[in-house]
Image (cartoon, rainbow, N blue to C red; front, side, top):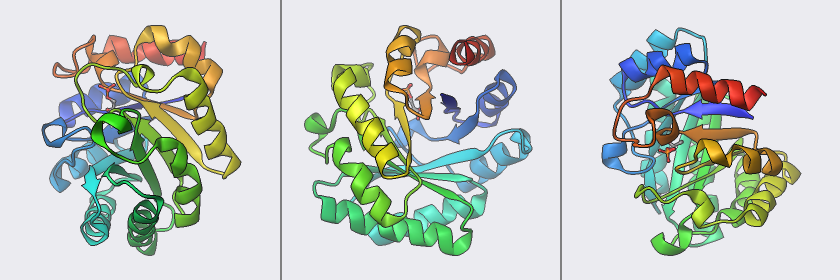
Length: 234
Ligand SMILES: O=C[C@H](O)COP(=O)(O)O
């Protein structure tokens, strides 16, 4: 399992990078679960990571605005993100998801076909009235997306495992692989979740709170990133 760590600024990005994360994911929690950070922060992170890892950037928890999403995706790509991550937050149907993801993917790949698009659904989709992540792999594959993900939409400490059980997350993972996509699981994951995550077998796990010592509002700690890297490799 590859490890995606989500810093919010340059200082945390250095810690995540030196600690050994596989992907350094720039976000802005002040603007939501997959809140977008500023282009200059993405550029700064790209510069300090200096090619050690690919950079991911979130572009927001989106409603049905394909044009706005496509333009934001291009912005993240131009700023240097290698992975551009869009959240399907206020999206209820497969048709809406397909339209939004098709336009985001076109915006990114027209600019640089080597960049990857990540479509994120939310494990707590029922409480935010969003599309089920299990419906996303088929739609994402049709749209030309590279990675499908689940995260929690509301960051109130409740974990993805409180909303989707092992069986559902395995179904999501297997479907992604059936459609030729990579997949990622995130959402207040804890060290004690690692055995079940190993059984489920996602390509990537995404974390912040876990490597902040449990409270995602505090800073990322290098020793916790190193511990997680070691446990993921064990
Ligand atoms: O992409 C990963 C998220 O930033 C996960 O954050 P969290 O572990 O605090 O829920």
